[in-house]
Length: 288
Image (cartoon, rainbow, N blue to C red):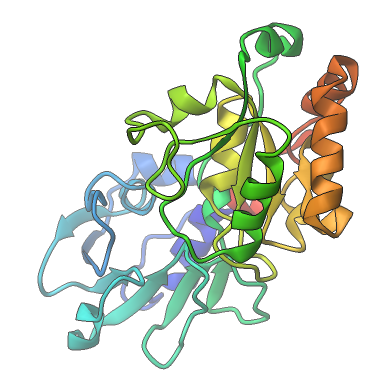
């Protein structure tokens, strides 16, 4: 689905004439050249090893140029304003596309606009459990209660949850904000794997805006405690995590956490649930 939109939606049809019905067929044919550039990205972004470069490389002979055919830009700067070529905005942040400065966008937004492809950060990878996954064994490896890994102090609701839940049991904070470990963690995945619960509140709330916070928890087999996207149930099975938007308050969220913490059978019933609706990774986020 994603490849088809990139191929037939975001790139100029008159410029790139090679079109086939199957991405696999495209790999076997002569690839047309395409010059690209990425700008305004975050620290740690790899221009040549990222999801978008890898998808495009299946269809085009890529080169990286300061005079690109297409400029891909993220929301962390303004360098994109200096280019006159076709532009594609990529965002995992709660920032909506501005089609005055881009031609197309990959965003979280439920925009009724053919220039926008909804591809939220939480769906840049698949966290379905393997067929041989054993939830009882996973639970036995959890020797700690709940974690909180944040550097951004701006979310009042998230901070309130940390403070209130800490009155029940210690919540380990391994980020810069509210750190109570004495050091910042180096390996987030390894850290989360120790915990039954992970606080996965977003920095802000908007329909469709869902980031890696929930998938980081799932990937570590830690039960996510989620707030942010009020329509998160369209992307993830709401029975597989604790959803603030179903419960309505932090107090109700904490009651649910305590219930599951004190009842292993109830906890296991939740983590056994498929992570995606109908136990299927969403079609629109599949590369093929």
